[in-house]
Image (tube, rainbow, N blue to C red; front, side, top):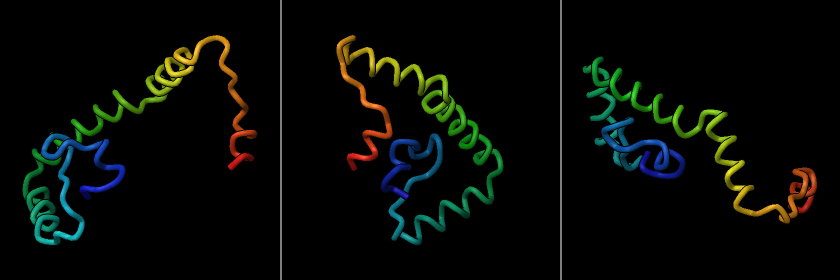
Length: 88
């Protein structure tokens, strides 16, 4: 669907297909195309897996989180997660 989370994960035609979820013709056309083309399914799946590993693998996410904390500087006050969730 061309809305929400998939927009940051999928580049249309490279990692999968995006379409308006209410455009039933576009959704059904994409399903039929994928059903008829095993090589396309494999190519899109492999590209999506590679993107997920590059962006969301645990070591990658940990390095990104560490970099964000490093930007805060050594004097930043970081509250424990329990204090943050309790404040919500």
